[in-house]
Structure formats: C-alpha cells, structure tokens
Length: 262
Picture (cartoon, rainbow, N blue to C red):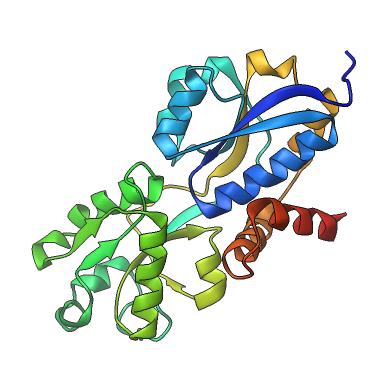
C-alpha cells in the first residue's frame, strides 16, 4: 500500500475539552507526518461517540475505558479498533489546599455540621455527558448530600474553570469534581478527597478509537506510531497547561510537546 505526499483525508473527532483537544492535536501531527490531511470535528462526549458510530468520525480522541465511556462505545464496538492506552485517567472530587485536611479528608466529611455550614452547596461541573458529571450527580444522592442542600450543577468547561478561579481567589470552601489529567491540578494543587464507596469509577485506559473501515486508509506506520505513543497523565497535563496557562493553541502545544519528547 503506497501513500502519496498528500495522503487520504482522515477525520479526527475531539471531545470538547481542552486536554482532549491537546491529545487530538498530537494525533493530527502524527497523521500529518505520514502524509495525511486531517479534518477536525469537535462535540461533547456522548454526541462525538454517536458521530463515530454513524461513520462521520474516523479517529476519536479519546475513549476512557471502562468506567467513563464504555456506555457510549459498547453499541458499536465491533466497528472499531481501540488502540493501546496513551494515558491512565481517573475522576476525583477535590477541595482547595487551604481547606483543612483534618476537617475535610473524604467525601463523607462534607456532611459534618461544621463543614456543611461553610461549604458552598453548589457543586459545579462540566457537561452532563462526562463521566465525572454522571458520577458526581449520583454521589450527591448516595452520600445524602442533597439532604443538606448540596446540588450538582453541570455546565460548560469555561464556566467550570471560572468558578474554580473565583472560588480560589475568594478562599471559598468548595468542592471540585475533577479528573487527572487536567491543568487545574498543576496550577492550584487541589487536594483529592477519599471516596471509599467507589462511585467515581476506576482508573481508566485512555485510547484512540479508529473505525475499521478507516484502517485501510491510514498509513500503517501512523497506526504503529499512535499505538506506541505513551503520553502519560503528566504529559497530557503538560499539554493542557501549555494551552491554558501559556496561551498556546492545541497544535502549538502539541508541536512543543513532541519536540521536547523527540
């Protein structure tokens, strides 16, 4: 199979969050290095998996399996190939470092009267299709936080980030439904809470997902490169920080990251 300098066009689908954009940008650069032109499609979690199931997305960046995204992938898994994991993400709830650990060490501590009195009752998150959002909505009920006035409020990524920044600036006591990798961990040193009920899922494998009918159009060496590319949580957070803290575009951040790893 030969590939011309301007190879077949591949559509890369990106979950609409900054760190996913960074991983998709790395994916794009790898495909371009083997002669492919790349189209980009971006959508929220559940919608993007639906687009791939319909054949509108060749490569999806990225599926977190099994906890966060298996429910979306399972209906068409026989139509795709899941590559080896590039990083190992997980969900968490966290509080700012100035909230005393002696008072708030685990999720159940949020029900303590002296903590509930000070803690913001609105737990702001990202879009409702994200694993962390589904898990968080359940946790509010399972820990009986709703009985004390706590609510989970899904929203946009920009609104979520602004809420964290505002809370930190005011030294407010609040809960952050978060995940690794995410640049806010690096920026603010947020402290994870213990969650012994296991409602936040497992440590997932984050992998690119490629439609089988697209495999014949992708340079085999590009597949090998993507299959063996290990970004790690730290690497993805580094890319995410370049985007959100240094102001780089996702492609600029991917270029800088790839040069540093060359």
